[in-house]
Image 1: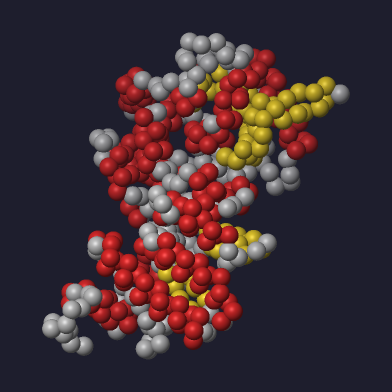
Image 2 (image 1 turned 90 degrees about the horizontal axis):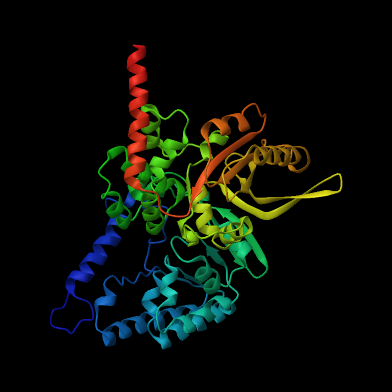
Length: 460
């Protein structure tokens, strides 16, 4: 193919050369082993429009190019028929009302001509740009086959409203580690497992769309935050947990600021060098009930003044109002069941403050809130609730329920005697309404590790 420099061309020679080289690489060159047999770039019946860099063009040239593409697609889809088209990076077309009308027209009429159009975009923010939100929302009211994936860092309420989802539908794709997508068409709903075919797995990672290394799962903004941590073990822990828990950059910042790493070390009754190495290399491993406990829990997101009196009901209501942030603080695997869950024994009604289910441990987690110091009575009451859940609520494949008493303070000796000897898993943890003093927590961790070192040295 020769480039005619004498004509006034729409594309530059360099742009056309890059496009042709890319197609050649996919069909015959270095990438052919991944794409051959898995693409329909085989003959002149397939046409690919490359629009890389189009947003940098001036508006008139950009619109002219988009309309040329859409006109060609319309003629093929609705004129000739029996044709399929795909529009990737849809946001390129969302800055012009006429272009949006083209696409809406295609979506409404293609099936009558035995044609199909596939529209894809990886960022919901593309549909929320100023001036196009009202124009693009009707696109999702047209009966189509929709494949919806995890919303990433997008506000759930925005995602639900834009894609016109029910909250129950959004819950199915809330967590990225599930590797699933929601299929919708009319009244049909299916949850599909996402996996890479072998040729893409060789290029991008293991099955399920998961990358082989943490660096493939975190954005550059995540690493900008991680690079502010000088301690290698601590930095490695936050990197692993950001991947394992699917933290956004904002959530990662919050966990670092709340000293999650130090709190986990202090929550362990056997904090030692092995615990430090395990957190750094693997992140949080949840294999037993004690693994989900943190001490203290940090509820700074509630905005309750530190010295202001409040009732247990006020604390419960505030936590439920901020349930997403509460779940983030609790850790992985927690699913909210409800508040004030009634238990009836001999015509007497009792109520569990908050109930969760942990899908990793396959166990109910009952939480009792106390606005004062831990008391033995609180442990006895929660023990009764756990016995009831084990006998009356648990399914046959559920593990024994877990109880957590959240209190403002606890005496180590009193807690040991109050909780010791019980057959149920009951834990007592403090909570604070403010960000903990990082330097103080670091000093406590260093003191615990020094004590462990001294003890080991004495045994040698």
